[in-house]
Image 1 (cartoon, helix red, strand yellow):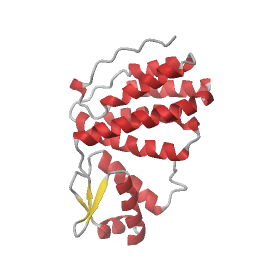
Image 2 (cartoon, one colour; image 1 turned 30 degrees about the vertical axis):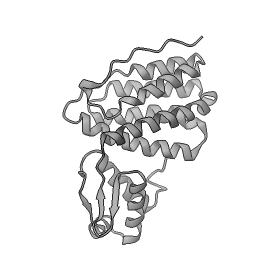
Image 3 (cartoon, one colour; image 1 turned 45 degrees about the vertical axis):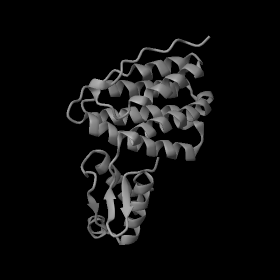
Image 4 (spheres, helix red, strand yellow; image 1 turned 120 degrees about the horizontal axis):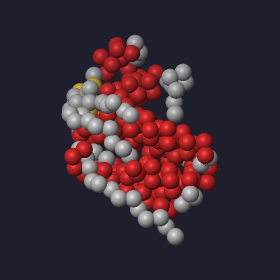
Length: 219
């Protein structure tokens, strides 16, 4: 992941604006003025335009002729699309990562899951949740795939925050525990099946989140 020490000004601008959009600080339809953003970050229009392109690639803004750049909205169809894309790509990454997952990595993922259980707000929970997924998927060694998954996680976070902002109670993520248990047992098929199912509730409000039963262990 890009760190503040190595990121360019364009990457920094896109990261900060993405955080604002995802957290709900910038609402759908809000216009992003190049002049104001360039002034805020003390830079020219060139890195701002590059930042806009990055945000558009993430699906967070839209560029419209004669209307400029605006914060993108989203529909339930897009929520479903992102969930299905995550399911496919994360399973692909997990299958390639599984042979390289050490006990230490699995322990770190378990600690990230515990941090999520103790989260006091949805933002903290999402950070822990994303850390859990990154730890398990990063060893796949496929940077383009991981970049696509990161972009989908950003979209998922926005859906999550919009649906869970008014009412929050940290969930105990049994899917994460089931994935870890299967991976520790070398049962990649069960881990992949639970992971594919796990992302399907993205964007749903907590009261409608389905109750999930553990999948049976494969023979």
